[in-house]
Length: 443
Image (cartoon, rainbow, N blue to C red; front, side):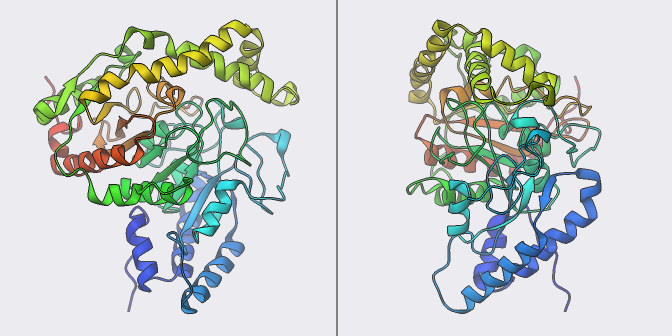
């Protein structure tokens, strides 16, 4: 009897089939490796594939399951890990030749958490140089002439192209939400510091965050639950959704005037279709300076964290940002740090009236060309504030590329955000033609 194809973008379904015995971990890993073998030449999502080790781990997972032992929530699930995250015995080169051949002796804290949950590290996904702006070789699976976004480009593309059901990224600005939107998958970053960053490349300690990718929101919640310290109930929240229809506050973040026409049309259509459940609210004027102040922090901390690296081995994007960082005055840096709490507090009146903020995940669909990873103007603000954010797939721009929606919640309100996002994910599935620019008649 021929086995049906494994639906990698349904991570919860894969997990359930593994738990029931309908699938074996070896079969899932073999399917991942076969897909990678067929597609990696075009997509180039992987810096390192650990085929033999992953198959061995799959066999060990099956033996443990047969023994009747208690199993973790990700038992037998293959996961892609961004190549700025330490993996014991596997290369972690951070997208730079300056760290070529580096093999850590210890796992990062989050990799240890993955393994405790039963997950299998399939390999290391491509990152931009030092998780900043200089692109790696990865292509967008929907159109190889377009960027997959950055810096977690490999993780987003690997999930989008069915190489692996789950993957990890690291947003310091927008490196989970934006590539997830460009590649048409679900992405999420929890409240700041919810997932430990020990053993992860340090670019900007004030901003560095861990995020997740999956084909849909349920998979992203499943992975985040396994990584976040303490009980969060994200997977349960994603499964249940909001009990009553939520209210979302549409905000036009700084940079809205630069948004692609399809983005603006999609939000106009959403407003019409959602009616009173979508209310437009303005961000306080203090947010107008947020992008520059976030960049001051990022630049200054990059200059300090990468000071020992040979600039001759780095790209112009990285060295230029470090030069900017060295010029940031201490008074400006401290003011930027203080502004973070001001911004977070300024969001509270919005969250008092709405369950979540709704805004674009990116300016528009993935730009053509591979020399840029796209603008993070609609993402960095939320990373700066330390609030949780998710992006939902489902809409298509008129050229057929994915168009993502971003939902933002209050700091610490991760489970509530997940319930609202799950409701909207189901609503989009039922109303896609009414709000997707690819389906809208042009005026």
